Length: 114
Length: 113
Image (tube, rainbow over the protein chains, first blue to last red):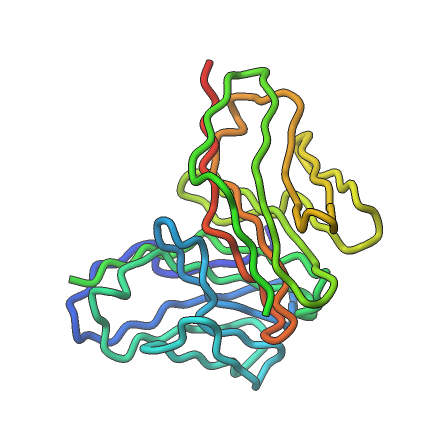
């Protein structure tokens, strides 16, 4: 089934450790996104990429980095995790990043930083 | 910048009753608005979207939303709630600067038998 896969499903991480969350889509979408979901705050955009080779900062980019080496993959890296990065992380993609495009979401990664 | 506000973090209705989830938007340009649903331990999926073609938008699972410019609203309704509608619902607006969605804080819908 076509869609977005995320790995790992969940992770417990010690503060100060480096962590990469993986995201892969097989829909050949140009645009990809990373959001974090926190209770009472909805989803907030961390980083986005409108096409392979380009990335941009979202609403809450500090402490996170991304790369977009090809169309399918969009990994999110926490260089040195802190407890405030405990959250559920969702990757999403859309066809062209256009204003009427539907965004398709992955199943999420639940990250706990201790 | 565009934003949305969802009124009511929790809404509880009886099975068969009307569902009304409120969303108001703020935008200096014509907005493109979306409703997404999230079932427990899952990602989000699109319910419906407003793209200026028609003010009354019909979505999946019997949901619809009406765009009202005079009220800056895009409320989500369903005439008769079903137990399977219990989920969290998010309103979102397309941010033309970042070319991404800006989400509201969500409304958790409970359906009582």
